[in-house]
Image: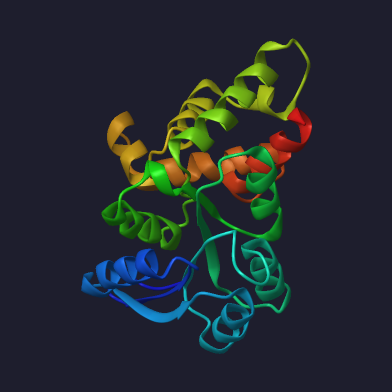
Length: 218
């Protein structure tokens, strides 16, 4: 989406103006990030994001007019390439699955992340990752484990020990680069394993794998 030396355009959709402004100030101080839009209402966000097409949009679910999920659906259905990361207080399955199915690539619970870590999450999205709060990722990982141990044949049984190990790290909040460091292998090797994982699961991203198993678990 952008090169390592390019500026990352970011939009923020948040009805709490104090939190919105604090986040905007933080991101404005980051060398590689530019805040190109701040919105407190969903409809304004849809119009603004479609016009500016930022690289990443941080979005709350609970907005005064339409929900953040509605915003994601409307922008995504219009063919806009903006990647959405949900930033919310909700950590339940209903909101999680709804946001992911609408097209969000990440889901972060506000109470579990600091403002500086949000900057890292944005870079993770640009790097092809899917930032998830630990509470969310652990729930998905538990689902993976149950599916593997219930004796039933699933797509996850086709993963090698190394592939599942990588998936486990990612589900515990590790970025692709951190996985490579932890396993003492190259970044590109991890990416190759990920491609194999997605091919075996018949998905394209970790988020799609989460949706698949959330549906099965439900």
